[in-house]
Structures are given as C-alpha cells and as structure tokens.
Amino acid sequence: MPLVIVPLYASLLAVMLIVLSVRVIRLRRAAGVPIGHGGQHALERSMRVQANFAEYVPIALILLSFVEMQDWPWPAIHALCIVLLAGRLTHAFGLAREPEDFRYRVTGMAMTFAVLGISAAMILAGRLLA
Image (cartoon, rainbow, N blue to C red; front, side, top):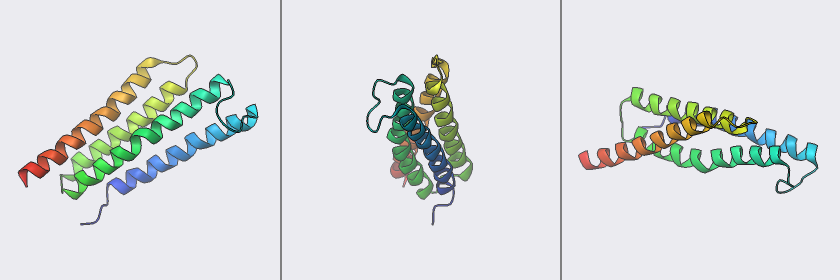
C-alpha cells in the first residue's frame, strides 16, 4: 500500500524548512557572515532553529511512514502528523523570539517528543501484534 498521508505532511514540513533556511541566508547576508554565526546572536539563534528542525523532523517522518505502512487507522496518522507540524511551528516560534519565550520552545519539543515516542510505540506494538 503506497504512503498517502505522511507525504502530505512531509511536503508541508519541507516548505517550513525552506522558510527557516531562507531566514538564515538573509541574516548571513545582512551580517556578512559566510560560515558560522560570527558572534551574531540573531544569526546563531536562527541557525539553531533550522538545525533543531533538521535534527528531529527526518526521524519523525521515518517513524510516521512506518506507522502508515503498518496500516494504523488514518485518523491516528493524521493526528500524529498534525501534532508534529504544530510542534515544529511552536518550537520555531518560541526559539526565534527575542527575548525567548520558553513556554513555546518547551511545548514544541514536548509535542515533537510525543510524536516520536507514540510512533515508536505504535510500530513496536504493530510488530508484536503481527
């Protein structure tokens, strides 16, 4: 059975990564910093938002794809994908703020961790029940 749900959300998350990356590029150009952050706090913060996204989203999408491949109910898959998308938006919003509002950052990470943990549990349960 082909994946139909996760690719939709992967596409939305790819657009989000492009937006985060363009933000880093613009700050680099404005600061004249070709590599690293050059001591520019705003650039460093923007780079961390982008890097954190790139660190967590790929494994989440892999796990979600496995969940979909195991034929878990589509409402559960959509719910997990929506939580991931909302979590990443919330985290990026919180981390990008000056001064930082930790509530958004913590909530975004909690949502991301929930998706990772629940997806992993579903895969293991699906395997054990097969």
